[in-house]
Amino acid sequence: MFEHPLPSTIKPLKLARQQGKLKGFMPLDRMPALVADCIDREGRLEADLQLDMQGRWPVLSGVATARLRMQCQRCLEAVEVPLRADISLGFVQSEEALEELPDHLDPFVLEEEEIPLADLLEQEMILVLPIVAYHEECEHAPYQAGDEVVEVQDEKPNPFKVLEQLKGNIKKSDQ
Ligand SMILES: [Zn+2]
Image (tube, rainbow, N blue to C red):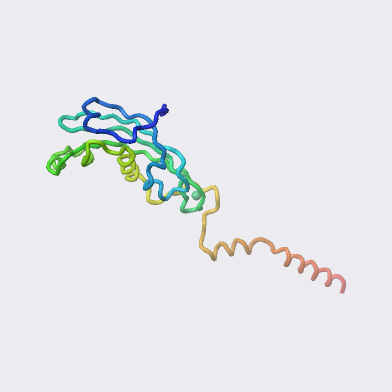
């Protein structure tokens, strides 16, 4: 379904006039700020986007998804975090245009004719990134503060203590 890599740069105004489509994938390692807290940079973002003119506004709309591998803040094991960004961007080229942009469009200020697509997608994904990642239900015991971990360890029988008790019993039975 997403066999083609997305282009590294796009010309939003030109694409909008041509009713262009952007359907494909981009490796996550192209978005360093997005994967900064991830366990690795494996995987990819998939996007199904289109550009068109809505009145006088060039608009980029559609969906981008990705699965990040992060550290669960309860059990500290890896957790896969699915991300989905519903994108609805209106491109503007001036401050005045920014104020006139319809409310249902998020503004994207175009400073150049051609922009890096990775930067745009990265910004959109960071907006939907959870502040804290964790499993819905952790397979492993939740990580707990030091004292409680020590208590858990003490519950296990100490083999040397067991041996001493046995020796004690033997001595008693000898008497
Ligand atoms: Zn967990």
